[in-house]
Length: 183
Image (tube, rainbow, N blue to C red; front, side, top):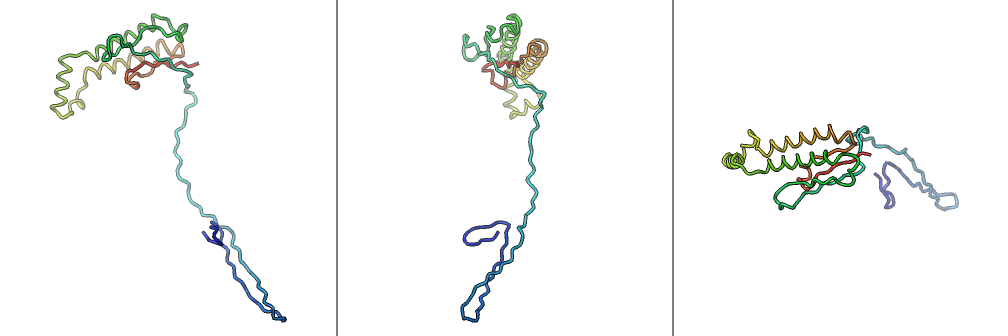
């Protein structure tokens, strides 16, 4: 970069020299001669751009319907409302929806039930400095895996035929079940 008169000119190099000559009459004339070198371009490799390609065959849902938790039995019990939302009427039957939600509620009740095996599992976690879960799965984790397999099965057999999809409720910490609608 070259600084000329307070202005920074990148990539341009100008060399100026001033010749002072005297004419016969005694006057001084200043002649400026300059050599101009063409601009130089600094070639550098651009930083590698990483991007994620989007598969255009995947569809984006047009809306999502939330099935809220049923707090009628208290805060500590994970149970979802079995009433068919108005926006799902005509897409699936009330019996299909009730079967899905009732099955999810039953599995969650089984997962959260207090048992001696759960107490033993927790004690072994503490005694082994939390190395126990590396080798053994708890009843809760096994039941959650069964729940996710059930949701995948329901999606493939019932919901996706009607352009619907039940999302993974673990991602929302079981606060609600989200059903995505694809139009």
